[in-house]
Image (tube, rainbow, N blue to C red; front, side, top):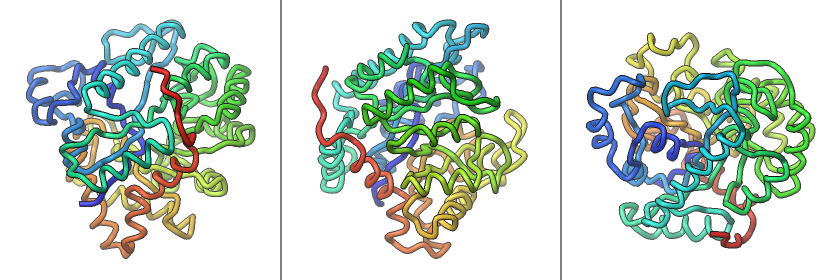
Length: 362
């Protein structure tokens, strides 16, 4: 099996919102959830640290995820929405603390610099996966936990390396999935500060207007960590061909998502089932990006692994990402192309854009 670099996971969110011990196996997590009905994907977990090791997923971006929605009335810990920025900040800090706790136990390694990434990757190339920590680059899914542009530097010092301005709905900085609108005044200032510090801008979830404005204003490195193609599946959560071309022009990388509603048109949450959906649909979106680019240098994996009830039917745990290699080979991709898609494009991007070294602020 070859190494894999996954551009988007939510390990801390699943731990703290779902009460899932990410050190346990997927089978152990699902057994512990028997009889629970607060979420549709209870007993359908597909990701954990042992599953990542089994699948030789050496590195991933993993998120801090919280939103501000003053009028929302959350009913459980599964909700991402908080009444104030301070509450969202505290939630994200708790998720960051979880990553630090895992690192202290040797389960993960937080990667803040190109040097750390290179050392970690070389370890995985030389040693069996079951003896190694998972490398994690910290990302933020929705910038609401950043109390203001003045706070970006402290987040950078804490290890944050990429930021999405919004998630679903409006954030304090931009419009996200399912709504229209551009950057707010605070969002424009925040973007300038992200640019100044060398933070990576992740355009995933941005509305069309917000994405356009962000690309016009931001001069630094850009990615779409977990996005599929609107030409194959309609909806504002997907990238148009023009948006993909703009990312290609910026030497960006686009991670293809495994979530069923982003893979095939007409998926209805809670009604549709993955019986007829396979990982070949993931390859369809990878194909589309590679065809637009004319090469394999910008397509990657941003799995966003959730519950198996809305993942391809032949995908049961993170280890099944290994199936993508043979699927791509059957479509005529050569060894270098497959390496590019499964790890090399992300590895190249982050080696280029992470700071060379990182000061230890712990």
